Length: 328
Image (cartoon, rainbow, N blue to C red):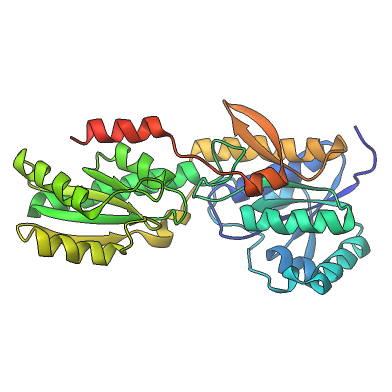
């Protein structure tokens, strides 16, 4: 292992997701295991620019594996998008003796890390943390599994009232550019229809599907809508359209919103975060950089940051077929 890496920074950036704290814990304890110093960088890249650092040891990360959010906080940084801001961040890192860092976040966070690496040849490793699961190079991002379970639990509760009142519910879930949450949670919750940005799903088809459900004897329905659907209407406009064309339905909307980002991480996310955190430190110590650690076929793999940023996370078309079959 390379002796060059002596002091690693760790930060969380972008939207928070369950499992980030578990990843921080793994990074800090892996550093301790390999006799490397670890420094927490608060408030993402903005904290890097402002020198908001704190040394961290194993005891600083006790009792956080079960916590949602991020103890290091997160913030957007317009300053880091400027050359002057990144120069200040670099100067602060050098002054603090930090010679590499691990960033836990999504493609925006990785883009900042890649640019920083290009400008200063500063060793960096990315850990994918976003509930949307829209990062290329990993089958699961931190927080995705927890978000799925949160959505499933919510839809199960909504179905209780839908059945009691013979109602149609549109349930909007997160996923502006990727329908992973909507598709998987929709199947898991037994939704009658699932609308995702990857699939062209016309309004006429939606009406026809709901009519078939009604004719088959269903007295209530759940339609899961990804917030980034390409029908061209938001979920409330969908509600109005269905009420106009199917007045027999009593239609309601439930937007789950940021509750999907919170909560105690699932066992899967805790284990994944631990594996990726340890691998991130081992990768730095091996002299490698500008990579993202991810999961593929239950193996931890490495993907160049530029590929993770530019690559397209693809929806599982087999699941789309399964959804069509089991919702009929």
